[in-house]
Length: 129
Image 1: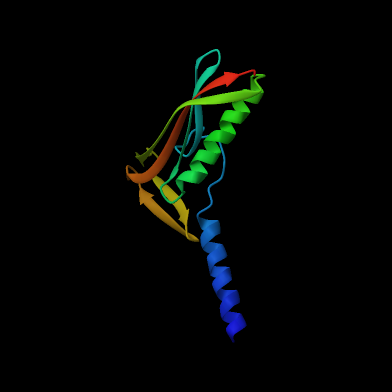
Image 2: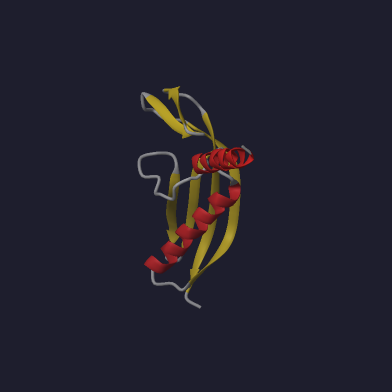
């Protein structure tokens, strides 16, 4: 009986953690994901926006991953973080409805709903050495 309780507890904990995992991706047409803006030859703004349930450390990891990709794509060996910012944002969409998977359940919000999110932004300079 005690072993079954442990297995059930671990299973529920695993499901909860899986539901809170964010996926690294470009924002493209949506609000969640990364975006970058080239300021000059070797300076960029890189941001990552995700739902409020995702922790700040995960967002910083995603931004750093994108910064490394930008450096590599442009033939640079390194990058230096000049500035960084994190803030709570409200995500709004002009689609008919928004569906969000949270804790294993789909939550549906009407068009124009304001959902809390998080955004991390880095300003980076690409470096060869």
